[in-house]
Image 1 (cartoon, each protein chain N blue to C red):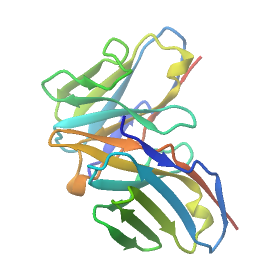
Image 2: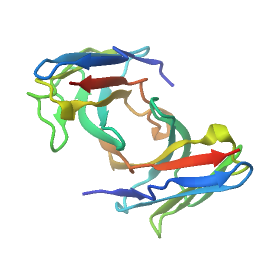
Image 3: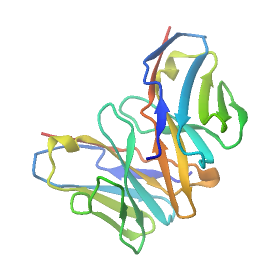
Image 4: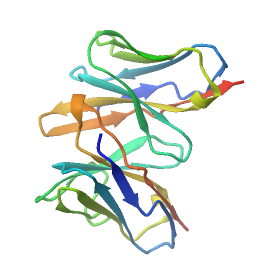
Length: 113
Length: 114
């Protein structure tokens, strides 16, 4: 059973701080990794994707991948109250036409004004 | 990314009845994925539907309970049959992977079974 594990939280940070979200995965063959943001009552929104080891930055978001440690993280700099949401880590497994996106249970982030 | 719409956006149903959820995509896609998100839980893949063939179901999901249709390359339906309160969830459709293996979701159907 391929698994994706996240700290369930909740994670609470003050406005302007850095929020750090972590994820580990079990399938060493995984090649594509994603972070989704989900506001309450809404569907998940893709915010970051990462495919190779190292850091990938997009605005206030930085995704970090370490395939040797099977670890993915998301850093949110200068956190805003509007960042308060559940963040889902997802890992793509399989290949060709037989692939599947496996999700972690999500980390609830609250940014306090 | 494709524009994805779902109908209905939400519904409240009685135990024992069935509900068909529609998913429309604004471009042709070969594969369509259906997910379920139970309250407070993450997303779980129900099945993958290719146009012109039977859907492939994940462990724990069966065709009799969740029949899927895929009449053309832009449309799919998921039926939740003989519903019980345990079926209360958000149901999400998602077309096949876009560029860079990215997957996007429809707005979801929030189902409550009484």
